[in-house]
Image (tube, rainbow, N blue to C red):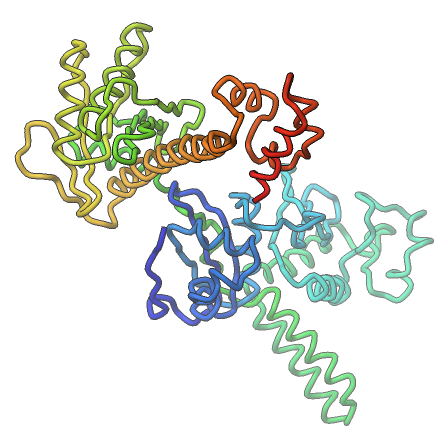
Length: 484
């Protein structure tokens, strides 16, 4: 399925892009420093021949694309990871260890709270901040802030005097030592509240203090120390500075899905949402190998377990209208006989002729009234019984996209079945060209070998051994003919 791609529609900014197949399923999610440049790579004509098989398969499956611009590459990385974990697109290679980005965890239930790092948010009453894609910068920042505000770093929930004996932070005066009472719980909480203000973006005073320390070190020609203060400032701004986190609750909108079903109900004026749709298509060549398909969509998604295929039995000539009538009659006679629920919508691939044939079939079997429409491919015209003019919907409307997906799937299923029968018959006819092979012998050969391809791989001895009563000389002629 070809889709149009206009690079001018996409901004040259960092972001995340998503590809969908014709059923609306997300099949690939990627990130880019330049969305326009990155996405254009997929739609270059040479990609269809020079790309590796996996990429070619992806490109052929793309029916729709969408993008989400963000402020910087870090945000693109986080958003991409979130989408991959949420939608699990089949063309994405997930991280082998499924490692998640670091987040800051604060347990306010502890007597003396501290800053700790985690990778998973839990429903445990703790406060979480993040995620942060640059783990090393986050670790350095948490370590510095703990020293700067004299916050404890020991992993114990409530440390005591005995634990202080093994604490290096107390020895180098990086900790206020609440474990031995050098600071009251109230004063410790005040320190921690001052630190907590940074998580709301209030870093102006801290940055000013660090700027002063950097200038002072620079004035004393201590450039190494000045560089350290500069790096700390950069880290603080990287972690706590204002960023455009507009994607925090972002999600890829679902389509076609339930929204498209509701839109289809509105477009066709149906009494209820067509949650169960059945679509029919015919495939044949001059009336030969004539088959039909029936595909089923449940709530806007393919329900492959309910697909059916039919060999045309009654119509011998090339007459698509008569074939459609036969298939509709057979399908709904079966539903009536088994007293099963009728679909919410019946779709036939074609215009007024196919629609009229379907309606005639339903009338002949006294089928209860149900919505039936035809969809003509040329201008995507929707034919509805009782209406003289076809209904035309906007090309970008969800209802039309759903009908197109259903119609195209019915067509694919019918063509696949027709091609299978035709190729099987062509393969079998090769045996008719070999002297000494009659109809009975041909059936015995095809019974012994599941396909002509399997027969072609066998040598004369194996053929003679597996087919009862077949001589080695005749087996040699079969092998030689198939290998030519």
